Image (cartoon, rainbow, N blue to C red):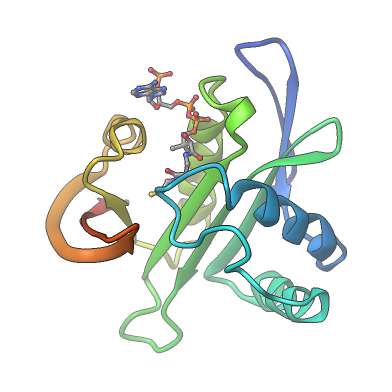
Length: 179
Ligand SMILES: CC(C)(COP(=O)(O)OP(=O)(O)OC[C@H]1O[C@@H](n2cnc3c(N)ncnc32)[C@H](O)[C@@H]1OP(=O)(O)O)[C@@H](O)C(=O)NCCC(=O)NCCS
């Protein structure tokens, strides 16, 4: 996949490319940054504790796999968004995978999430392997649900009590896109 350059709604230039092993430190810094920015993520501040070598190993696996993807969105060489997709290893489940994505809060609403998702869908079609893209989203995450529905994802079911935060349980929708 070639890097993509796109002009955002605010006039800034976004570069979307696959993460390299050398991005491990920047990815961990990004995760540290977003962990306190959204209650919709599956981790909070200090809960994502991979070391740089562990992150490097994960990025290496993504790089060498034909059905996993680690995408970075960058403005002026700073990571402002990540998207990870992972499909099954065995022949019966290699065609189907799940992704998760986030954008730094100060960059919300400029079209970055939409461009990252377009890039995933184009890459998945190009693999010739991926036929189905899934995701889980908290049922009250309107912003994300609107983004996914806009790309053609449909709700396939609801998972009860998927998240526990501040004494409360939250349901998630299971959504999917058939390519
Ligand atoms: C969800 C998230 C990735 C969206 O990223 P983003 O860069 O702000 O999204 P975009 O600017 O591309 O907007 C995409 C669509 O989202 C929807 N959207 C954007 N802002 C919205 C708002 N304030 N209210 C409702 N929907 C909104 C719109 O449908 C929009 O499409 P449009 O611009 O064509 O109308 C980002 O808000 C985020 O990282 N949130 C925290 C983590 C998270 O929730 N991740 C998803 C977990 S499943």
